[in-house]
Length: 228
Image (cartoon, rainbow, N blue to C red):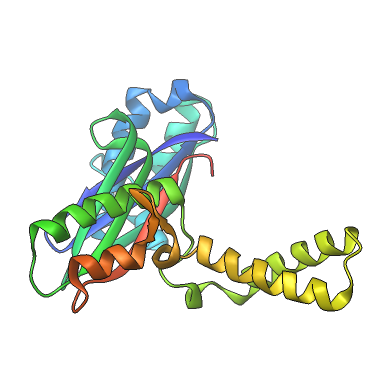
């Protein structure tokens, strides 16, 4: 799967949306690029509400859905609207990171992360920029490990159990190993407990506490990489 994502920002909110196609050739096509840019702005205005987005009118007077159909017919390739998310900046600040930029705000991998704090500082600004790069590199699932969905944990447990079973481990030993692996899985996939990419001796939460242990919080984030 090829395609692009686009950031769109307003004073009080920031959005990201993914538009997928089948080839890099189409991803660089002007019609596709212009469609993606306009979709990004509309998506931000409707707060990433898929139904509202599809029914919204574009500059030519037709809906997003109809323009998508027309674009597919013109280009002759499957094009889909993928993941999207809007982070509201009411009491927080959003930091963004672009990687593999194709044109303007159009890229192959992007991150938006929302930080909440009482008073801004150079350290917080630097942390926000570095954190968005960390998320791009480390691909966490959630901010805190308690937020990992139970079905995700159960799926990982089954994989580990099958692996240990094939190795012929005794039940009691297998249970202890499984527990340790699950805890490691949660830590590796939770932003706060990941090794900080700038200094792997530290966890993200350690760096956050050094910057501002009282008010600084990671409110939310999203990472989109085309093809994942």
